[in-house]
Length: 220
Image 1: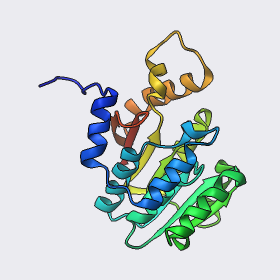
Image 2: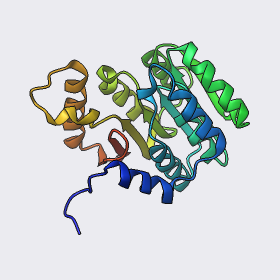
Image 3: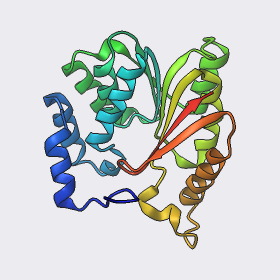
């Protein structure tokens, strides 16, 4: 027994995947294709994707927003978890999302995804003020530029419904957040976000050590 989260070495991680990961072929193909790209470190772990999909199913979420899409693995895994609904996927890079669209089409779920290329802040504000989505979104996944996480958070809080869920990716940032000597701007931004979430009375939180750290935020 342990009083703290178990450390995963490669052998134990491989075992974890072998007894828990249910990954369909198109997800596996997309993950493997992404692994060969220069920005492959932006890809979420497969067990994290499965965990997110489970949350979508448990919630019965129908309106989802993703901030930061890259090659679309997290979008795909959440779309496959939908029985009904839509995902608004926001990204600034049309090149990587070309790959995403190909795999979404292969999985025959592309009709569930509304891809919006452009500045995420502008898109979120448009959803709030032009599309009247305030307080209607069930589930938001934030996995974009770390400096703007606080801005995305405040906009997401306006968009999310009561009891809705916001997920923040990379909140452990490879362990760098625990090293106070590390003053890299991204590290500092995530460290400050973690502290702000800890003291935010508007939400309930749980930081889960899955992937690169995932914070689950429930709007009260």
